[in-house]
Image (cartoon, rainbow, N blue to C red; front, side):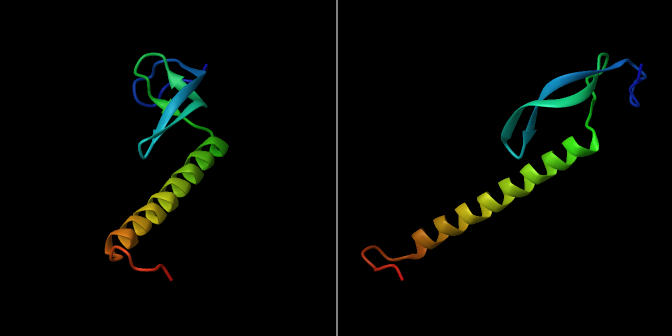
Length: 80
């Protein structure tokens, strides 16, 4: 049985919800300490979470740029 690095409690496989920049990703596999709740992700899962983080950042930037452009464009002006 694996033990937690933080508290030395038992660690077991579980599905957890992970919040990434305000977006909740449900049912992510993780090893979770039964005592303190510390979560451990394997390399594949950690890479998946990092990829989601990158997608969220890109979408937020694109959304913000669109908002700024719409605010700066005078009403009634034709879009190029």
